[in-house]
Image (cartoon, rainbow, N blue to C red):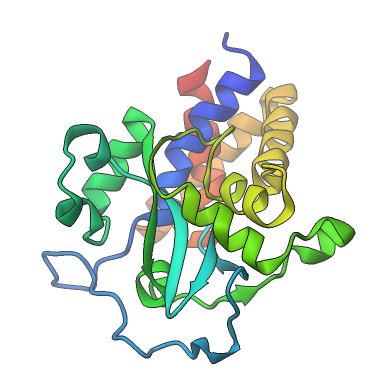
Length: 230
């Protein structure tokens, strides 16, 4: 069997797709359009602020650069296959994202606040409480983010969007949600009975409800991909 870190990495790769993939409205055949410019009040944001957007299972992070611009790390296949900046700068589609996760390629890109948050609520500097005296100056944080803009390797365990922002604002790349998720994976691996029970509950919810609500997604996908990693 694979080691726990390998199993956790595989699980995260599968589950991370649920973090960024944008749901399509009923009857729509294309990508959901982002909110119109001005959807968010950016007057309360300062250059160097750490922005986070809670999503279904994880949190997406970025560094505010001022003038409605956010630097954030996103899985993306295009930087690996083309140097056309106009194509790369277009909003990352689900297909590009999925292929980026599989190929483990990404880019630190600058988008509008609307494209970054994609309709989600935004928390500002919410992680500062975890680092206390380690917060760097706002200009230093923004400068670090700007220097990293461009193609980069992608790893759910070692180089994701949270590692990017914690390096920029606090000086050290850390991902608390990855650490927490790995601990959960370890607990599940130690108790094989919980894996079987979770699979049965997940399958029952699909059969009975026809679709899995967001609260049952971890129940369904974690055991499934644990078996794949085994």
